[in-house]
Length: 345
Ligand SMILES: NC(=O)C1=CN([C@@H]2O[C@H](COP(=O)(O)OP(=O)(O)OC[C@H]3O[C@@H](n4cnc5c(N)ncnc54)[C@H](OP(=O)(O)O)[C@@H]3O)[C@@H](O)[C@H]2O)C=CC1
Ligand SMILES: CC(C)(CO)C(=O)C(=O)O
Image: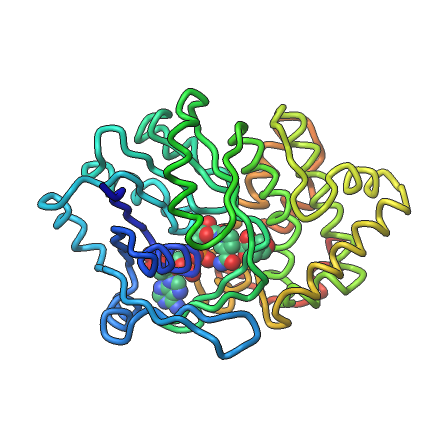
């Protein structure tokens, strides 16, 4: 029998993956808090749009309002629940779906940052799994419309409890309807490796207002991005996580911060190459949030690195500064501007 899948948060990521699972005929139900989005998808379908072209697939998934979660009591228990809300909504989303899970069900973070320990506090480590989504960028450009802003990406999946690694295969099969997937042994390692990339990009685009392309081809943001990334690598290594290079060579990032000009040139070239492959309009999810006037994940990205850095005795002052600036932008006390990055360097 098909696995019963639930997607909590049908935004850019949840809608992208859940929509393609539905299109492949999987038994998937999606829940979302934005009434206009839910109603638009019910009426017109979910439009999954391609990078830099008019090509799109319109799918008709089972999508419901959050207030309808209780209906699941009459339905087959959920085998795999993907948590695809923002990091700050992880706790309630996990608590909400937990009563409807199958006895050996899996709750999977389909998010950035490292939210799995929070899920495990609620669901238990043996029910907790996580994904690191690499190289894929999507934007919910309007209710019912999700656009891929990058070439296709790649997903690494892991288990909070290493003894449960076997259960990752079913999770990987579901995600493989959208992207290539690998099962990895070290969940904290893959999550922190993705955090390296987010911590060099998301806050910087959010605070400067720059697209990914502008940020990765402007000297000040390139330099600051490299420093942020190197510090996140140092903290991850101090925490003894099994980091895997994601987008950039982590050794080169650290060497660049230590003054190795060849390593810095290697990172700059990688930034320019990757930025050139994305849509010129691509912005990381935090910058999308700022443009939409929504709360950001800063606490779970630069804020998290700053906190863990302090615990490990590693200087992460630039992360703390980015985090504080984003907080002030969220509150309306500052507006995004490139000068804010110059102030940090
Ligand atoms: N976008 C990307 O390219 C990538 C994102 N991620 C990660 O995926 C996770 C989910 O993020 P993502 O899918 O980008 O988030 P989205 O903002 O696209 O969707 C999350 C939720 O935000 C709400 N929402 C979004 N826009 C509006 C709006 N204009 N008005 C009202 N509500 C709105 C919806 O519900 P609600 O009201 O409940 O918030 C939606 O379900 C995050 O951890 C993110 O970091 C990871 C890799 C790439
Ligand atoms: C697409 C990417 C990798 C950009 O940093 C991302 O994870 C995000 O937008 O949150």
